[in-house]
Length: 275
Image 1 (tube, helix red, strand yellow):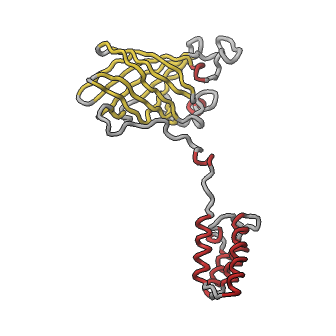
Image 2: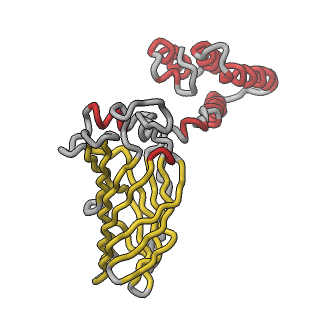
Image 3: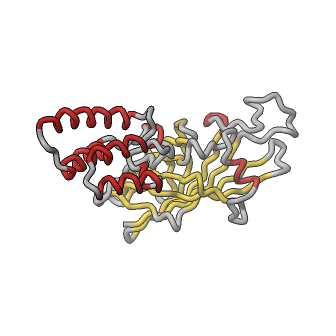
Protein backbone atom coordinates (compact mmCIF):
# COMPACT_ATOMS: atom_id res chain seq x y z
CA UNK A 1 0.00 0.00 0.00
CA UNK A 2 1.05 3.57 -0.62
CA UNK A 3 1.48 5.42 2.68
CA UNK A 4 0.08 8.84 1.95
CA UNK A 5 -3.10 10.89 2.07
CA UNK A 6 -4.06 10.31 -1.56
CA UNK A 7 -3.04 6.62 -1.66
CA UNK A 8 -6.45 5.38 -2.81
CA UNK A 9 -6.43 7.34 -6.07
CA UNK A 10 -3.81 4.87 -7.29
CA UNK A 11 -5.32 1.73 -5.69
CA UNK A 12 -8.15 0.63 -7.99
CA UNK A 13 -9.52 -2.17 -5.76
CA UNK A 14 -9.55 0.06 -2.70
CA UNK A 15 -11.11 2.89 -4.68
CA UNK A 16 -13.97 0.67 -5.90
CA UNK A 17 -14.74 -0.48 -2.37
CA UNK A 18 -14.63 3.04 -0.94
CA UNK A 19 -16.83 4.37 -3.76
CA UNK A 20 -19.41 1.61 -3.26
CA UNK A 21 -19.79 2.37 0.44
CA UNK A 22 -19.95 6.09 -0.25
CA UNK A 23 -22.70 5.66 -2.90
CA UNK A 24 -24.75 3.40 -0.62
CA UNK A 25 -24.53 5.89 2.25
CA UNK A 26 -22.80 3.38 4.53
CA UNK A 27 -20.60 5.57 6.77
CA UNK A 28 -19.10 2.75 8.86
CA UNK A 29 -18.06 0.70 5.84
CA UNK A 30 -16.89 3.82 4.05
CA UNK A 31 -14.49 4.89 6.79
CA UNK A 32 -13.28 1.33 7.49
CA UNK A 33 -12.50 0.80 3.81
CA UNK A 34 -10.28 3.89 3.90
CA UNK A 35 -8.53 2.64 7.03
CA UNK A 36 -7.96 -0.79 5.43
CA UNK A 37 -6.35 0.77 2.38
CA UNK A 38 -3.85 2.63 4.53
CA UNK A 39 -0.58 1.16 5.72
CA UNK A 40 -1.48 -0.09 9.22
CA UNK A 41 1.77 1.30 10.63
CA UNK A 42 1.26 4.78 9.26
CA UNK A 43 0.37 7.81 11.32
CA UNK A 44 -2.69 8.29 9.07
CA UNK A 45 -4.19 4.98 10.27
CA UNK A 46 -3.64 5.86 13.91
CA UNK A 47 -5.30 9.27 13.59
CA UNK A 48 -8.11 7.83 11.47
CA UNK A 49 -8.77 5.22 14.16
CA UNK A 50 -9.28 8.04 16.65
CA UNK A 51 -11.82 9.61 14.29
CA UNK A 52 -13.67 6.28 14.06
CA UNK A 53 -13.74 5.92 17.84
CA UNK A 54 -15.13 9.41 18.29
CA UNK A 55 -17.65 8.76 15.57
CA UNK A 56 -18.84 5.55 17.28
CA UNK A 57 -19.40 7.44 20.53
CA UNK A 58 -21.32 10.14 18.75
CA UNK A 59 -23.49 7.82 16.64
CA UNK A 60 -24.83 6.17 19.76
CA UNK A 61 -26.58 9.38 20.70
CA UNK A 62 -27.31 11.06 17.42
CA UNK A 63 -27.45 10.22 13.75
CA UNK A 64 -24.43 11.65 11.96
CA UNK A 65 -24.79 12.36 8.27
CA UNK A 66 -22.41 10.81 5.78
CA UNK A 67 -21.79 14.27 4.32
CA UNK A 68 -20.54 15.59 7.65
CA UNK A 69 -18.35 12.54 8.13
CA UNK A 70 -16.79 12.99 4.70
CA UNK A 71 -16.02 16.62 5.50
CA UNK A 72 -14.21 15.52 8.67
CA UNK A 73 -12.13 12.95 6.77
CA UNK A 74 -11.32 15.40 3.99
CA UNK A 75 -10.09 17.93 6.54
CA UNK A 76 -8.00 15.16 8.11
CA UNK A 77 -6.27 14.35 4.85
CA UNK A 78 -5.63 17.96 3.94
CA UNK A 79 -4.12 18.71 7.34
CA UNK A 80 -1.97 15.55 7.38
CA UNK A 81 -0.23 15.96 4.08
CA UNK A 82 3.43 15.12 4.55
CA UNK A 83 5.49 18.33 4.89
CA UNK A 84 8.45 18.93 2.61
CA UNK A 85 11.57 17.60 4.28
CA UNK A 86 14.21 20.18 5.12
CA UNK A 87 16.84 18.44 3.00
CA UNK A 88 14.55 18.45 -0.03
CA UNK A 89 14.10 22.23 0.15
CA UNK A 90 17.83 22.64 -0.12
CA UNK A 91 18.54 19.75 -2.47
CA UNK A 92 19.72 22.10 -5.16
CA UNK A 93 21.48 25.26 -4.11
CA UNK A 94 19.71 28.33 -5.36
CA UNK A 95 21.00 31.72 -6.31
CA UNK A 96 23.51 33.15 -3.88
CA UNK A 97 22.79 36.84 -4.50
CA UNK A 98 19.97 39.38 -4.28
CA UNK A 99 19.69 42.29 -6.69
CA UNK A 100 18.79 45.97 -6.24
CA UNK A 101 15.93 45.92 -8.71
CA UNK A 102 14.57 49.40 -9.38
CA UNK A 103 17.60 51.19 -7.93
CA UNK A 104 18.90 53.64 -10.56
CA UNK A 105 22.50 53.25 -9.36
CA UNK A 106 22.58 49.62 -10.49
CA UNK A 107 22.78 48.19 -14.00
CA UNK A 108 21.75 44.60 -14.64
CA UNK A 109 24.26 42.19 -16.13
CA UNK A 110 23.47 41.29 -19.74
CA UNK A 111 24.01 37.54 -19.35
CA UNK A 112 23.79 36.78 -23.07
CA UNK A 113 26.65 39.19 -23.81
CA UNK A 114 28.86 38.30 -20.85
CA UNK A 115 31.28 35.38 -20.52
CA UNK A 116 34.21 34.23 -18.43
CA UNK A 117 37.02 32.36 -20.19
CA UNK A 118 39.57 30.48 -18.17
CA UNK A 119 42.76 28.69 -19.02
CA UNK A 120 44.51 25.95 -17.08
CA UNK A 121 47.63 24.02 -18.00
CA UNK A 122 50.05 21.36 -16.85
CA UNK A 123 52.86 22.49 -14.61
CA UNK A 124 55.35 22.19 -17.48
CA UNK A 125 53.01 24.12 -19.79
CA UNK A 126 52.93 21.37 -22.41
CA UNK A 127 49.18 20.77 -22.15
CA UNK A 128 46.45 23.34 -21.61
CA UNK A 129 42.69 23.70 -21.78
CA UNK A 130 40.53 26.73 -22.48
CA UNK A 131 37.05 26.68 -20.98
CA UNK A 132 34.03 29.01 -21.05
CA UNK A 133 31.49 29.63 -18.32
CA UNK A 134 28.51 31.98 -18.31
CA UNK A 135 26.78 34.30 -15.85
CA UNK A 136 23.39 33.61 -14.33
CA UNK A 137 22.71 37.15 -13.06
CA UNK A 138 24.33 40.16 -11.47
CA UNK A 139 24.60 43.92 -11.37
CA UNK A 140 27.16 46.71 -11.47
CA UNK A 141 26.87 49.86 -9.38
CA UNK A 142 27.65 53.12 -11.17
CA UNK A 143 27.77 56.49 -9.42
CA UNK A 144 28.66 59.76 -11.17
CA UNK A 145 29.81 57.83 -14.22
CA UNK A 146 32.20 55.62 -12.23
CA UNK A 147 32.01 51.95 -11.32
CA UNK A 148 31.84 51.68 -7.52
CA UNK A 149 30.65 48.16 -6.85
CA UNK A 150 28.73 45.19 -8.07
CA UNK A 151 27.97 41.50 -7.77
CA UNK A 152 28.41 38.86 -10.46
CA UNK A 153 27.09 35.32 -10.21
CA UNK A 154 28.58 32.55 -12.36
CA UNK A 155 26.54 29.46 -13.22
CA UNK A 156 29.05 26.60 -12.95
CA UNK A 157 26.68 24.23 -14.75
CA UNK A 158 27.29 26.20 -17.97
CA UNK A 159 30.94 25.16 -18.27
CA UNK A 160 31.90 24.54 -21.92
CA UNK A 161 35.08 23.42 -23.65
CA UNK A 162 36.76 25.43 -26.42
CA UNK A 163 34.32 23.97 -28.95
CA UNK A 164 31.38 24.90 -26.69
CA UNK A 165 30.69 21.27 -25.81
CA UNK A 166 29.22 20.41 -22.41
CA UNK A 167 28.80 16.64 -22.51
CA UNK A 168 32.29 15.18 -22.56
CA UNK A 169 34.92 13.79 -20.24
CA UNK A 170 36.72 17.09 -19.67
CA UNK A 171 33.59 18.99 -18.63
CA UNK A 172 32.32 16.16 -16.44
CA UNK A 173 35.71 16.02 -14.69
CA UNK A 174 35.76 19.78 -14.12
CA UNK A 175 32.42 19.40 -12.33
CA UNK A 176 33.77 16.66 -10.03
CA UNK A 177 34.59 17.27 -6.33
CA UNK A 178 38.36 17.41 -6.94
CA UNK A 179 37.78 20.34 -9.29
CA UNK A 180 34.74 22.61 -8.83
CA UNK A 181 32.25 20.20 -7.22
CA UNK A 182 29.43 21.74 -9.22
CA UNK A 183 26.67 19.53 -7.82
CA UNK A 184 27.35 20.87 -4.33
CA UNK A 185 28.41 24.38 -5.39
CA UNK A 186 26.47 25.32 -8.56
CA UNK A 187 27.37 29.02 -8.34
CA UNK A 188 30.54 31.03 -7.98
CA UNK A 189 30.46 34.72 -7.15
CA UNK A 190 32.43 37.94 -7.49
CA UNK A 191 31.56 40.84 -5.18
CA UNK A 192 33.32 44.11 -6.05
CA UNK A 193 34.39 45.97 -2.90
CA UNK A 194 36.63 48.72 -4.28
CA UNK A 195 37.49 50.32 -7.63
CA UNK A 196 40.56 52.50 -8.10
CA UNK A 197 39.91 54.42 -11.31
CA UNK A 198 42.43 55.81 -13.76
CA UNK A 199 40.55 56.62 -16.91
CA UNK A 200 39.77 53.44 -18.82
CA UNK A 201 42.18 51.42 -16.69
CA UNK A 202 41.01 50.42 -13.25
CA UNK A 203 42.21 48.29 -10.38
CA UNK A 204 39.35 46.24 -8.98
CA UNK A 205 39.32 44.65 -5.54
CA UNK A 206 36.73 41.96 -4.96
CA UNK A 207 35.77 38.90 -2.96
CA UNK A 208 35.81 35.77 -5.10
CA UNK A 209 33.77 32.78 -3.92
CA UNK A 210 34.40 29.32 -5.41
CA UNK A 211 33.25 26.06 -3.79
CA UNK A 212 31.86 28.07 -0.89
CA UNK A 213 35.30 29.54 -0.10
CA UNK A 214 35.75 33.32 -0.29
CA UNK A 215 39.12 34.97 -0.84
CA UNK A 216 40.04 38.59 -1.71
CA UNK A 217 41.41 39.27 -5.19
CA UNK A 218 42.69 42.32 -7.08
CA UNK A 219 42.91 42.60 -10.84
CA UNK A 220 43.13 45.22 -13.63
CA UNK A 221 40.13 45.97 -15.80
CA UNK A 222 39.29 48.18 -18.74
CA UNK A 223 35.96 49.97 -18.39
CA UNK A 224 33.73 51.86 -20.78
CA UNK A 225 30.66 53.51 -19.29
CA UNK A 226 28.35 55.48 -21.54
CA UNK A 227 24.77 55.65 -22.82
CA UNK A 228 23.43 53.52 -19.99
CA UNK A 229 25.82 50.67 -20.69
CA UNK A 230 28.96 49.27 -19.05
CA UNK A 231 31.55 47.26 -20.96
CA UNK A 232 34.14 45.73 -18.64
CA UNK A 233 37.08 43.50 -19.54
CA UNK A 234 39.39 42.19 -16.88
CA UNK A 235 42.04 39.51 -16.33
CA UNK A 236 42.60 37.66 -13.11
CA UNK A 237 45.06 34.90 -12.17
CA UNK A 238 44.31 32.87 -9.04
CA UNK A 239 46.00 30.11 -7.06
CA UNK A 240 43.32 27.43 -7.27
CA UNK A 241 44.61 25.70 -4.12
CA UNK A 242 43.20 28.59 -2.05
CA UNK A 243 39.72 27.50 -3.19
CA UNK A 244 40.34 23.79 -2.55
CA UNK A 245 40.61 22.85 -6.23
CA UNK A 246 42.92 19.92 -5.60
CA UNK A 247 43.24 17.84 -8.76
CA UNK A 248 46.93 17.04 -9.40
CA UNK A 249 48.07 19.99 -7.30
CA UNK A 250 51.53 19.62 -5.76
CA UNK A 251 50.24 21.53 -2.74
CA UNK A 252 48.04 18.56 -1.90
CA UNK A 253 49.80 15.61 -3.55
CA UNK A 254 53.38 14.41 -3.87
CA UNK A 255 53.71 14.53 -7.66
CA UNK A 256 56.53 14.86 -10.14
CA UNK A 257 56.55 18.06 -12.18
CA UNK A 258 55.47 16.26 -15.34
CA UNK A 259 52.50 14.73 -13.49
CA UNK A 260 51.17 17.90 -11.90
CA UNK A 261 48.81 20.61 -13.09
CA UNK A 262 49.65 24.25 -12.48
CA UNK A 263 47.88 25.85 -9.53
CA UNK A 264 47.46 29.04 -11.56
CA UNK A 265 44.18 29.54 -13.39
CA UNK A 266 43.81 32.57 -15.65
CA UNK A 267 40.39 34.16 -16.00
CA UNK A 268 39.46 36.59 -18.77
CA UNK A 269 36.17 38.31 -18.00
CA UNK A 270 33.92 40.09 -20.45
CA UNK A 271 31.08 41.73 -18.52
CA UNK A 272 28.28 43.81 -20.02
CA UNK A 273 25.66 45.62 -17.95
CA UNK A 274 22.76 47.80 -19.10
CA UNK A 275 20.04 49.97 -17.64
